[in-house]
Image (cartoon, rainbow, N blue to C red; front, side):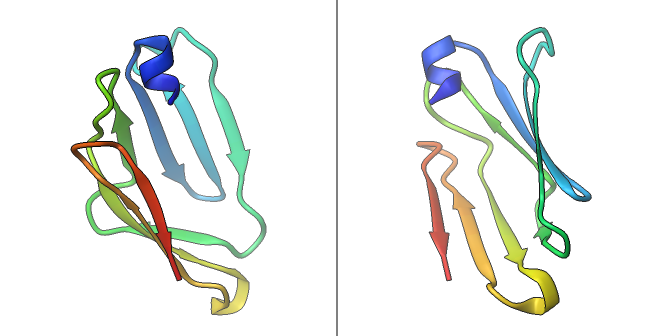
Length: 88
């Protein structure tokens, strides 16, 4: 939604212990969201998703594991629409 509303490309980066949301030009607001202790995010295709102003994205599939291996989820980002879905 931010990319479309602001007509600017955004990146969502998954790093150890946090998620970072920033504009491609790195001139806008940067938001860092810390992950709870023990939460892990893994991706087979890279740890960055780009969201484009036209509504699409680079897409990706991410495995989220809760502390101690509990509460596992899969997050899918659709490349053509940028829609995000979460599956247990």
